[in-house]
Image 1 (cartoon, helix red, strand yellow):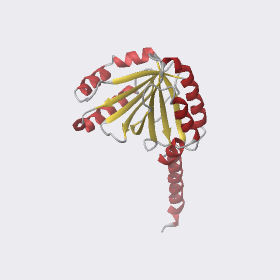
Image 2 (tube, rainbow, N blue to C red):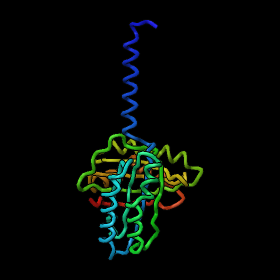
Image 3 (cartoon, rainbow, N blue to C red):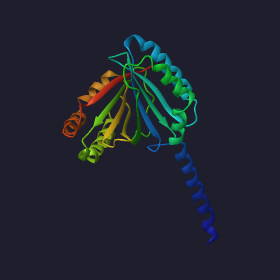
Image 4 (cartoon, rainbow, N blue to C red):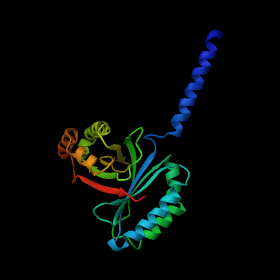
Length: 231
């Protein structure tokens, strides 16, 4: 080997290693995602919120925790959602069998009026650099259920609207997740600066076109729910 190239090769190897290390520290679509829907009696909303606050504080300290957000439905105080992201499957499994998760489920059991609906998912399109959520941010979690033959077409459409939506004013996050045990079921997670930004997005040409095309593929109603972050 020509010794003149040795320093260049060494530098390239070091740069590649540094890039790999940076990538490992910033997990993308490989990080497991989880959404959990919870419904309690309206009179138990404050008690449920307290349980969720404590679970969030404990869960964020666990190894592999990347995101743990607790949300309350705007229209109905007794309905909540948890959005989670974990470094890998082992981290999530350790959390799900750990003290914080068990305490949350146990505390919610006597308050719930609906199923503890936890869904394990894989992110298929995420915002590489989401903005921090604003104080008045509106979170939207949409369950998209298409009939099986339209699964791949729906993925293409959802990736397209995700890319277009991130360019719009007030967009703070837009992600598309796929449910692990039902590959034709998806969760779309949006965060908008405020209600005005969300309203402007919904009447935009890309959003209207997306909803029109998607409606022909769906096996259930378009289930979009609007939340506020509890913290």
